[in-house]
Image 1 (cartoon, rainbow, N blue to C red):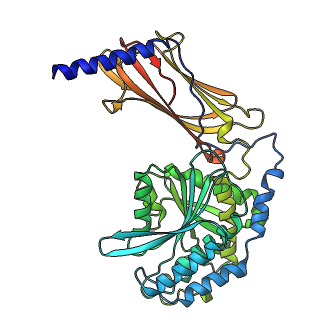
Image 2 (spheres, one colour; image 1 turned 135 degrees about the vertical axis):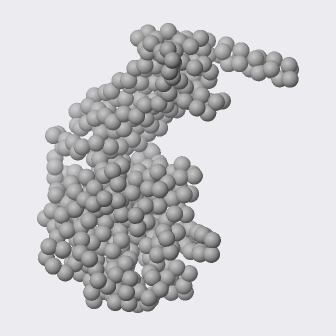
Image 3 (cartoon, helix red, strand yellow; image 1 turned 120 degrees about the vertical axis):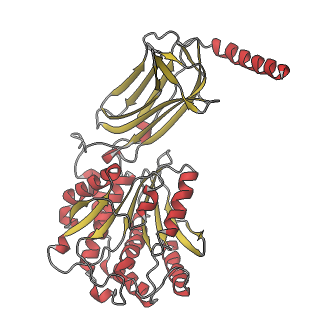
Length: 447
């Protein structure tokens, strides 16, 4: 026991000696983020930035959407676990493969139920690992051919993959068809749980569920966008593009509270942001044997597809004014707080073009104790964890000083994530440091 204690002391003394050679701060690097009201750049040509979105909308083909739905209906009822769903899955897989995107089956199991999710991936060109998911479910109830629920969503996913695969986006887009939805969101729950366990940076999830039915002119002009408060930024985006491209979309987005009956909620339950589009009208053929293409409104379905391609393009960062590389983070630790013990700066290198709307997460965590570093003030402790929402023009500075800290080795992490029109921004930066004698903070070189 005494020998082990001596060894630990030798290791700690060696670390302190190494650190003491660096008495002033060592700078770190850069980051990016996500969340705030829309800021339109005054220096950007409003037409130039949107030509690709208009072009994509014009490539939406109502006849192809109709063909996909008719094919889905022709398989008859296709509940999870049936041979019909297996055959429909093959059709979907082959249609996605035609886009030259990588496509994969992901098997899932839940007690007595098993199934397959189908995933096509359009890799983002940004240097971050941000992911946007657009999804629908391809299973139906045991009695329904599932034209509107959810052949409508499946047909749009296939159209989106075909069109958007020819363009580049800052963030990765995953086009996902889930099974097991009618049994309780089984396929999406499996996928979302694994995404959380593997620390996937899923920025937002948009589900398409029952989006092909409208009878009156008023119903044909509106779409419901369900969201919880944390995911409202996605509704802001769909509302903005519906307004900016109204001549091409001709839909009004109606905001509604959280819908707990579609696949996006599996991601919300795992801590991600998620919303869904649902048709404005009430469909009397829902979950019946008469959920067929003859009762659908394909013009309305096409409008929803137009809205979705524009919304996804904004979320994934098509032709972004600012990208993650344009944000730089500087992190410093100083001895005895001159002018502060810890200094953070986030710079916007394209401040002449646009502001950066971001959230900034800052945390200091003790490595061996697995808890936040605490600063003490008389009779209470304050955890060193901060969450900020900022619109950065030139730069933003955050200084910490005049504090006593709990001593030891710590992990210093900053996550900058974009919001609203800057949703595609994301950077994470980590370094390590040493706090000794309560007031002294020294940073180690970033690993």
